[in-house]
Length: 341
Image (cartoon, one colour):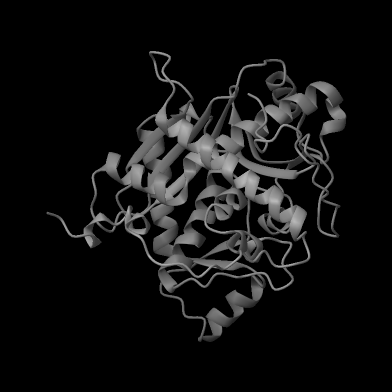
Protein backbone atom coordinates (compact mmCIF):
# COMPACT_ATOMS: atom_id res chain seq x y z
CA UNK A 1 0.00 0.00 0.00
CA UNK A 2 1.39 3.38 -1.00
CA UNK A 3 1.74 6.19 1.47
CA UNK A 4 -0.85 8.92 1.08
CA UNK A 5 0.36 12.44 0.31
CA UNK A 6 -1.26 15.66 -0.80
CA UNK A 7 -2.25 15.72 -4.46
CA UNK A 8 0.55 17.93 -5.78
CA UNK A 9 3.16 17.32 -8.48
CA UNK A 10 5.98 18.31 -6.14
CA UNK A 11 4.79 17.83 -2.53
CA UNK A 12 6.47 20.28 -0.19
CA UNK A 13 8.47 18.90 2.70
CA UNK A 14 7.02 19.34 6.17
CA UNK A 15 9.38 20.21 9.01
CA UNK A 16 8.39 18.69 12.35
CA UNK A 17 11.20 18.91 14.91
CA UNK A 18 11.20 16.60 17.91
CA UNK A 19 9.69 18.19 20.99
CA UNK A 20 10.67 17.43 24.61
CA UNK A 21 8.00 14.70 24.96
CA UNK A 22 8.33 13.30 21.43
CA UNK A 23 9.82 9.91 20.57
CA UNK A 24 12.40 8.85 18.05
CA UNK A 25 11.13 6.78 15.13
CA UNK A 26 10.76 3.14 16.07
CA UNK A 27 8.64 0.53 17.83
CA UNK A 28 7.73 0.76 21.51
CA UNK A 29 6.04 -1.95 23.53
CA UNK A 30 3.36 -1.24 26.16
CA UNK A 31 3.80 2.54 26.11
CA UNK A 32 1.46 4.37 28.47
CA UNK A 33 -1.44 6.31 26.99
CA UNK A 34 -0.06 9.51 28.56
CA UNK A 35 3.30 9.11 26.82
CA UNK A 36 1.69 8.17 23.52
CA UNK A 37 -0.82 11.03 23.46
CA UNK A 38 1.83 13.47 24.69
CA UNK A 39 3.80 13.03 21.45
CA UNK A 40 3.06 15.64 18.77
CA UNK A 41 3.18 13.10 15.91
CA UNK A 42 0.06 12.81 13.75
CA UNK A 43 -2.07 9.85 14.78
CA UNK A 44 -5.40 8.33 13.75
CA UNK A 45 -7.46 10.55 16.04
CA UNK A 46 -5.63 13.62 14.75
CA UNK A 47 -6.49 12.65 11.17
CA UNK A 48 -10.17 12.52 12.13
CA UNK A 49 -10.00 15.82 14.05
CA UNK A 50 -8.58 17.51 10.93
CA UNK A 51 -11.80 16.54 9.11
CA UNK A 52 -13.77 18.50 11.73
CA UNK A 53 -11.64 21.63 11.47
CA UNK A 54 -7.96 22.66 11.66
CA UNK A 55 -8.60 24.25 15.05
CA UNK A 56 -10.26 21.10 16.43
CA UNK A 57 -7.09 19.22 15.54
CA UNK A 58 -4.75 21.83 16.97
CA UNK A 59 -6.54 22.34 20.30
CA UNK A 60 -6.64 18.57 20.94
CA UNK A 61 -3.05 17.97 19.84
CA UNK A 62 0.07 17.92 21.99
CA UNK A 63 1.29 20.98 20.04
CA UNK A 64 -1.17 23.31 21.79
CA UNK A 65 0.12 25.16 24.85
CA UNK A 66 -3.39 25.15 26.33
CA UNK A 67 -4.41 21.73 25.16
CA UNK A 68 -8.13 21.06 25.27
CA UNK A 69 -9.15 18.52 27.87
CA UNK A 70 -12.62 17.42 26.88
CA UNK A 71 -15.08 17.31 29.73
CA UNK A 72 -16.91 14.06 30.29
CA UNK A 73 -20.07 13.48 32.23
CA UNK A 74 -20.22 10.73 34.83
CA UNK A 75 -21.46 8.12 32.37
CA UNK A 76 -18.75 8.94 29.81
CA UNK A 77 -16.04 8.83 32.47
CA UNK A 78 -17.28 5.46 33.73
CA UNK A 79 -17.33 4.13 30.15
CA UNK A 80 -13.74 5.29 29.60
CA UNK A 81 -12.61 3.56 32.80
CA UNK A 82 -14.41 0.36 31.78
CA UNK A 83 -12.71 0.47 28.40
CA UNK A 84 -9.26 0.84 29.95
CA UNK A 85 -9.92 -1.96 32.44
CA UNK A 86 -11.20 -4.20 29.64
CA UNK A 87 -8.11 -3.54 27.50
CA UNK A 88 -5.80 -4.30 30.42
CA UNK A 89 -7.65 -7.52 31.22
CA UNK A 90 -7.38 -8.76 27.62
CA UNK A 91 -3.67 -7.95 27.57
CA UNK A 92 -3.23 -9.60 30.99
CA UNK A 93 -1.40 -6.57 32.34
CA UNK A 94 -1.71 -4.77 35.63
CA UNK A 95 -2.76 -1.25 34.86
CA UNK A 96 -3.62 1.67 37.12
CA UNK A 97 -7.34 0.82 37.27
CA UNK A 98 -8.27 -0.76 40.61
CA UNK A 99 -11.58 -2.41 41.47
CA UNK A 100 -13.38 -0.61 44.27
CA UNK A 101 -14.97 -3.25 46.54
CA UNK A 102 -18.77 -3.39 46.38
CA UNK A 103 -20.42 -1.29 49.07
CA UNK A 104 -17.24 0.57 50.02
CA UNK A 105 -17.41 4.31 50.61
CA UNK A 106 -14.26 6.41 50.42
CA UNK A 107 -15.77 8.57 53.17
CA UNK A 108 -15.29 5.77 55.74
CA UNK A 109 -12.07 4.93 57.57
CA UNK A 110 -11.79 1.67 55.66
CA UNK A 111 -12.43 3.41 52.35
CA UNK A 112 -9.88 6.16 53.03
CA UNK A 113 -7.25 3.54 53.86
CA UNK A 114 -8.03 1.59 50.69
CA UNK A 115 -7.75 4.73 48.59
CA UNK A 116 -4.46 5.69 50.26
CA UNK A 117 -3.04 2.23 49.57
CA UNK A 118 -3.73 2.78 45.86
CA UNK A 119 -2.63 6.38 45.54
CA UNK A 120 -2.72 7.63 41.97
CA UNK A 121 -4.97 4.80 40.77
CA UNK A 122 -8.22 5.11 38.88
CA UNK A 123 -11.06 3.20 40.50
CA UNK A 124 -13.69 1.11 38.77
CA UNK A 125 -16.91 0.03 40.45
CA UNK A 126 -17.15 -3.67 41.25
CA UNK A 127 -20.28 -4.06 39.11
CA UNK A 128 -18.49 -2.47 36.14
CA UNK A 129 -15.53 -4.82 36.58
CA UNK A 130 -18.01 -7.69 36.56
CA UNK A 131 -19.48 -6.31 33.34
CA UNK A 132 -16.01 -6.37 31.76
CA UNK A 133 -15.54 -9.96 32.87
CA UNK A 134 -18.90 -10.83 31.29
CA UNK A 135 -17.62 -9.33 28.02
CA UNK A 136 -14.49 -11.47 28.17
CA UNK A 137 -16.55 -14.55 29.03
CA UNK A 138 -18.73 -13.84 25.98
CA UNK A 139 -15.60 -13.65 23.82
CA UNK A 140 -14.53 -17.01 25.22
CA UNK A 141 -17.93 -18.67 24.71
CA UNK A 142 -18.22 -17.48 21.10
CA UNK A 143 -14.68 -18.52 20.14
CA UNK A 144 -13.58 -14.92 19.57
CA UNK A 145 -11.04 -15.04 22.38
CA UNK A 146 -9.25 -18.04 20.88
CA UNK A 147 -9.35 -16.44 17.42
CA UNK A 148 -7.45 -13.38 18.67
CA UNK A 149 -4.89 -15.31 20.70
CA UNK A 150 -6.49 -15.57 24.14
CA UNK A 151 -5.80 -13.54 27.26
CA UNK A 152 -2.39 -11.88 26.89
CA UNK A 153 -1.74 -13.60 23.58
CA UNK A 154 0.10 -12.17 20.62
CA UNK A 155 2.04 -8.92 20.75
CA UNK A 156 -0.08 -6.30 22.47
CA UNK A 157 0.04 -2.53 22.93
CA UNK A 158 2.46 -1.85 20.06
CA UNK A 159 3.21 1.86 19.52
CA UNK A 160 5.01 2.90 16.35
CA UNK A 161 6.43 6.27 15.35
CA UNK A 162 7.69 7.01 11.85
CA UNK A 163 8.47 9.89 9.50
CA UNK A 164 6.93 9.68 6.04
CA UNK A 165 8.63 10.84 2.83
CA UNK A 166 7.03 14.29 3.12
CA UNK A 167 8.53 14.74 6.58
CA UNK A 168 5.36 14.31 8.60
CA UNK A 169 5.95 12.63 11.95
CA UNK A 170 3.32 9.92 12.37
CA UNK A 171 2.20 7.53 15.09
CA UNK A 172 -0.13 4.63 15.73
CA UNK A 173 -0.88 2.23 18.57
CA UNK A 174 -2.24 -1.26 17.88
CA UNK A 175 -4.06 -3.28 20.54
CA UNK A 176 -2.74 -6.64 19.33
CA UNK A 177 -0.79 -8.37 16.57
CA UNK A 178 -1.44 -12.11 16.36
CA UNK A 179 -0.97 -14.68 13.62
CA UNK A 180 0.06 -12.05 11.09
CA UNK A 181 -3.08 -9.98 11.70
CA UNK A 182 -3.85 -6.78 13.62
CA UNK A 183 -6.76 -6.41 16.04
CA UNK A 184 -8.33 -3.40 17.72
CA UNK A 185 -11.04 -3.67 20.40
CA UNK A 186 -13.90 -1.19 20.43
CA UNK A 187 -16.53 -1.15 23.17
CA UNK A 188 -19.88 0.36 22.26
CA UNK A 189 -23.08 1.33 24.03
CA UNK A 190 -26.56 0.80 22.60
CA UNK A 191 -28.91 3.27 24.34
CA UNK A 192 -31.29 3.40 21.36
CA UNK A 193 -31.67 -0.43 21.16
CA UNK A 194 -30.48 -0.62 17.55
CA UNK A 195 -29.95 -3.95 15.83
CA UNK A 196 -26.28 -4.97 15.83
CA UNK A 197 -25.50 -4.27 12.18
CA UNK A 198 -27.05 -0.80 12.36
CA UNK A 199 -25.30 -0.09 15.65
CA UNK A 200 -21.86 -1.02 14.28
CA UNK A 201 -22.34 1.01 11.09
CA UNK A 202 -23.40 4.07 13.09
CA UNK A 203 -20.48 3.68 15.52
CA UNK A 204 -18.02 3.44 12.62
CA UNK A 205 -19.49 6.51 10.93
CA UNK A 206 -19.65 8.56 14.15
CA UNK A 207 -16.04 7.88 15.13
CA UNK A 208 -14.66 7.62 11.56
CA UNK A 209 -13.23 4.20 12.35
CA UNK A 210 -12.91 3.41 8.63
CA UNK A 211 -10.47 6.31 8.28
CA UNK A 212 -8.57 5.24 11.39
CA UNK A 213 -8.32 1.70 9.99
CA UNK A 214 -6.67 3.06 6.85
CA UNK A 215 -4.18 4.94 9.00
CA UNK A 216 -3.35 1.74 10.90
CA UNK A 217 -2.79 -0.23 7.69
CA UNK A 218 -0.51 2.47 6.29
CA UNK A 219 1.39 2.52 9.60
CA UNK A 220 1.70 -1.26 9.67
CA UNK A 221 3.25 -1.27 6.20
CA UNK A 222 5.70 1.46 7.27
CA UNK A 223 6.52 -0.53 10.41
CA UNK A 224 7.21 -3.69 8.40
CA UNK A 225 9.49 -1.73 6.09
CA UNK A 226 11.42 -0.32 9.06
CA UNK A 227 11.85 -3.79 10.59
CA UNK A 228 13.07 -5.28 7.31
CA UNK A 229 15.54 -2.40 6.92
CA UNK A 230 16.77 -1.94 10.49
CA UNK A 231 16.14 -5.33 12.05
CA UNK A 232 16.47 -5.33 15.84
CA UNK A 233 17.47 -1.64 15.77
CA UNK A 234 13.83 -0.78 14.97
CA UNK A 235 12.78 -1.82 18.48
CA UNK A 236 13.22 1.02 20.99
CA UNK A 237 12.13 -0.88 24.12
CA UNK A 238 12.74 -4.40 25.35
CA UNK A 239 10.18 -7.15 25.13
CA UNK A 240 9.98 -10.95 25.15
CA UNK A 241 11.96 -12.85 22.52
CA UNK A 242 8.72 -14.37 21.22
CA UNK A 243 7.37 -10.87 20.53
CA UNK A 244 10.48 -9.91 18.60
CA UNK A 245 10.35 -13.06 16.50
CA UNK A 246 6.67 -12.49 15.72
CA UNK A 247 7.40 -8.92 14.61
CA UNK A 248 10.35 -10.03 12.47
CA UNK A 249 8.17 -12.70 10.85
CA UNK A 250 5.50 -10.09 10.13
CA UNK A 251 7.98 -8.00 8.16
CA UNK A 252 8.81 -10.85 5.78
CA UNK A 253 5.62 -10.39 3.73
CA UNK A 254 4.79 -7.51 1.40
CA UNK A 255 1.07 -8.18 1.77
CA UNK A 256 -1.11 -5.66 3.58
CA UNK A 257 -1.60 -6.74 7.21
CA UNK A 258 -5.26 -7.76 7.74
CA UNK A 259 -6.84 -5.29 10.16
CA UNK A 260 -9.80 -6.32 12.32
CA UNK A 261 -12.14 -4.38 14.59
CA UNK A 262 -13.75 -6.41 17.36
CA UNK A 263 -16.81 -4.49 18.57
CA UNK A 264 -18.20 -5.47 21.98
CA UNK A 265 -21.36 -4.04 23.48
CA UNK A 266 -20.68 -2.79 27.00
CA UNK A 267 -24.22 -2.11 28.22
CA UNK A 268 -24.73 -5.40 30.06
CA UNK A 269 -25.55 -7.46 26.95
CA UNK A 270 -22.10 -8.37 25.56
CA UNK A 271 -22.93 -8.75 21.88
CA UNK A 272 -19.85 -9.08 19.66
CA UNK A 273 -19.30 -8.15 16.01
CA UNK A 274 -15.94 -8.68 14.24
CA UNK A 275 -15.25 -6.90 10.95
CA UNK A 276 -12.16 -6.74 8.72
CA UNK A 277 -11.20 -3.53 6.91
CA UNK A 278 -10.55 -4.33 3.23
CA UNK A 279 -10.18 -2.29 0.06
CA UNK A 280 -12.04 -4.65 -2.32
CA UNK A 281 -14.97 -7.03 -2.00
CA UNK A 282 -15.02 -10.70 -3.02
CA UNK A 283 -15.66 -9.76 -6.67
CA UNK A 284 -12.60 -7.46 -6.70
CA UNK A 285 -14.75 -4.33 -6.75
CA UNK A 286 -13.41 -1.34 -4.81
CA UNK A 287 -15.47 -0.85 -1.64
CA UNK A 288 -17.21 2.52 -1.42
CA UNK A 289 -16.37 2.79 2.28
CA UNK A 290 -12.68 2.29 1.49
CA UNK A 291 -12.85 4.94 -1.19
CA UNK A 292 -14.49 7.27 1.34
CA UNK A 293 -11.75 6.52 3.86
CA UNK A 294 -9.09 7.18 1.24
CA UNK A 295 -10.64 10.50 0.20
CA UNK A 296 -11.07 11.62 3.80
CA UNK A 297 -7.53 10.60 4.64
CA UNK A 298 -6.07 12.56 1.73
CA UNK A 299 -8.17 15.59 2.58
CA UNK A 300 -6.98 15.51 6.20
CA UNK A 301 -3.33 15.26 5.16
CA UNK A 302 -3.76 18.13 2.72
CA UNK A 303 -5.17 20.28 5.53
CA UNK A 304 -2.36 19.23 7.85
CA UNK A 305 0.31 20.11 5.28
CA UNK A 306 -1.23 23.49 4.51
CA UNK A 307 -1.54 24.59 8.14
CA UNK A 308 1.79 23.15 9.24
CA UNK A 309 3.34 25.25 6.48
CA UNK A 310 1.33 28.43 7.06
CA UNK A 311 0.95 28.34 10.86
CA UNK A 312 3.46 25.82 12.20
CA UNK A 313 3.22 24.03 15.55
CA UNK A 314 3.33 27.12 17.76
CA UNK A 315 0.40 29.14 16.38
CA UNK A 316 -3.30 28.13 16.71
CA UNK A 317 -4.76 26.82 13.46
CA UNK A 318 -7.60 29.28 12.90
CA UNK A 319 -9.45 29.04 9.59
CA UNK A 320 -10.27 32.13 7.56
CA UNK A 321 -13.76 33.43 8.35
CA UNK A 322 -15.82 34.68 5.40
CA UNK A 323 -19.22 36.39 5.62
CA UNK A 324 -21.51 34.68 3.11
CA UNK A 325 -25.22 34.13 2.55
CA UNK A 326 -26.85 30.77 3.25
CA UNK A 327 -27.61 28.65 0.19
CA UNK A 328 -29.69 25.48 -0.09
CA UNK A 329 -26.45 23.52 -0.57
CA UNK A 330 -25.59 24.32 3.05
CA UNK A 331 -28.46 22.05 4.09
CA UNK A 332 -27.77 19.10 1.79
CA UNK A 333 -27.06 16.89 4.82
CA UNK A 334 -30.27 18.08 6.55
CA UNK A 335 -32.91 17.66 3.86
CA UNK A 336 -35.71 17.86 6.44
CA UNK A 337 -35.10 21.60 6.74
CA UNK A 338 -35.96 22.18 3.06
CA UNK A 339 -39.51 22.53 1.76
CA UNK A 340 -40.78 19.76 -0.51
CA UNK A 341 -43.19 20.22 -3.41
